[in-house]
Image (cartoon, rainbow, N blue to C red; front, side, top):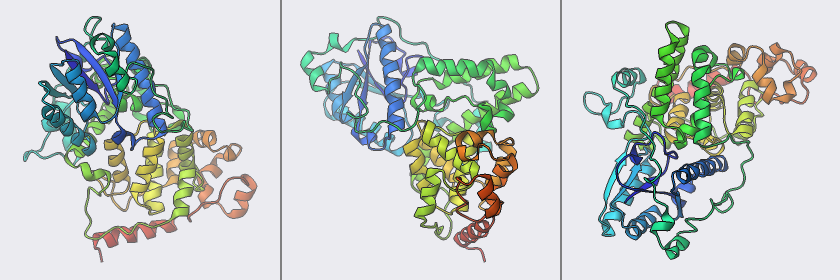
Length: 479
């Protein structure tokens, strides 16, 4: 019998660790050390994904075993109790996950449990050690990484286990053990039982069926216009697969196959370019995972070191206004309110909001990273750290320190009719489109007439640019 420890692979389809001849006993462990970094939207999505995974195993005559506690103890005890021959799991790439993997493997060995331990690559198309520079280090420039990533063969999705392959733990473990394992064969724990409040946001549904429906709809239509439309938040032209990829309710190989199927019918021209643009987004996801694997400190430390410390501003009022969507910069506020309401934000607006915090307000990117971590259902450590450090000009492949994503220019270019802002900032619903874009540069009298209930800008447009440039040049030691 083989024990499989689920973490960020909450699916049975396209899960390489589930393939094999041994009978399978699946388990998920609610680990307090991991939950300490959780937040209501993330844990809410997780519980929905676990409910879906449990149903998938029940359809195959098995059951997902649930436990709560330190996985070192839980998995060692479980392996001994069910007389397992092997323990498997899929890799994760954060420093915390890697340390936990090593600790669990050591605990299994120390417990004297005679099992084979094997880690699989079920999260990425290509593992970090397969794409390296000439000196076997990770790539720090995305374009170089992309070239090699594209050239490597992508494997096909793996078939799911079938009825008879999966063990029902109630047939393999005594009731006393199950009772002691925090109700292992009982219902899913509630958010409250795991120590979380209900999320304020309307978190999107979780589960494999939901993920595959999203993927099918995206592959049939949206992917062919993704190239340009993805930049316009009002067009709803993204895949919405990010939380599913984060928790593995859809397999990356299945997603890649869908893109290749789409490319095969796209022909030449814009449709095919759009498919390739989405594939490039998958490569970005893997690039940041490789960076995190090599540099786990990028979650808390600048990837790019400056000769001097960046003098971030301690601006609690500005930070609160940014979090609340009350900056007086409509596109930024629309994004922060979408985050509050949906636990998700369109990627273009995420970048604009991140640039505003780190450049216009000159607030440390780690403040923004932490807020997104607590509010996004699709928070992914690698991608979040990479994206925030890109915006802050401290990361690998980051935008130059002197480049800002102007909320006024970005609003005019990517929300030209003001649809997105009007949806999320109701105070501006009746405002003229030009006034929405130019709100930060209107005079007080015009703002009072157009939308008296909407906030004034918390920083003067343009003045903050010089402040940020001075701060970064001082950090660089210029002048």
